[in-house]
Image 1: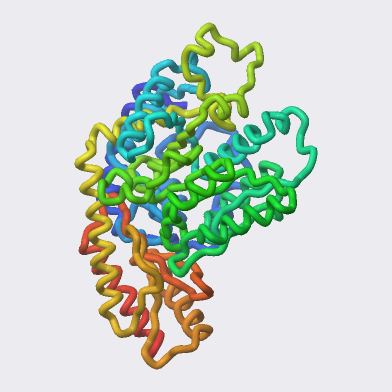
Image 2 (image 1 turned 90 degrees about the horizontal axis):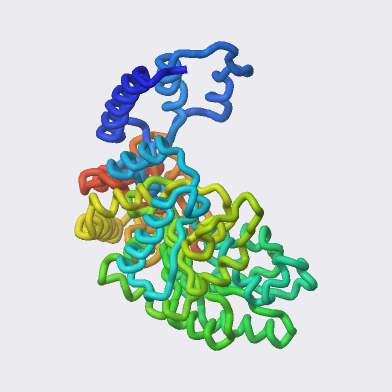
Length: 473
């Protein structure tokens, strides 16, 4: 094992490599070009008996691991919603790893608990949530959604299900047909079962249809089925559709149903005044989540979960074995009782670094730049005679497809666009993904990387056009 002096030496070298990497990510093929099993087959089947020097391990990292990495921090990464990083976030992560703190209760890391409380209050102000919401950092929005469903379940049952289990299974969860797949996983884990997840139809812009939601609820009530939770999405994964929150919130309030708002990606845009319209009606919601680790330049994982009724949240998850009892219990926030995990990382530190180093103005400027670049890309697609926009752009995701003027058959067009996606990504210059909207194979272009510029976006458009032209020769 290395000692402190050797650690200093290696750390300086590693930081130099990290800085060089982040400055030059666009020199790497964005998508890894390896085949399944390539990496696995090169790693020894047995662990080493003797110590290996860090230089050898680092060499293998560069020669073996790096070729198998898809470079999410590349400015040419336009595929999934980003998992952004930034220099202040990386510095904080280095400190977090060095401290190695467990942040499950206040006494195990007082600064971590109090910084988390303060930073969540900052976020609440930044995105415009009502003052009475209280926040906790979860690992992902998937966990936050599960947390919301479990809390909604327990509050509805007056906390009997935690103690006695399900006495019957006549419960319903409602979401749109475009809601993230984590909801489907959450209803399974929470014991509701997939058959009790109602996927409400969407309108022509892929937003939840509130009239259909009301009809589904009334139909269930007539059959003595109990509505437990409605999940509204602000920024669907497929197309960043914004569900009509105010309409949904009024329905939830009328029928006294827990309303959870999933703004995992789009929530960052709420720091802009011009996008505050997305949360009209939020005062009627019971919980809300967005991910700073997506579009707020904070390393994964960092998911901001807010809840109106923290007492119900805590009552759902609290445990109190003798070894976790403290004298400060009840006087401070012990975040182990605010979610599923007991052990917790010091996630608030990197968020604190990012917000302080960027400042509100810096964050707003970055987000507006990404949206402006998306508008410009959308214009290029709309002006092209060989491509078409599939659905309206809301933020920084453009949904489009290749549509040669002489082809109108959707089956042929779907096959053609699937081929285009694979050829574009195989070239390694950029990375995009796809979805299906109303059966149409749709290309997704997300412009949200920390260091993306207009030059990168223009280059991406050239790559897409060039590869499309090859398919029609």
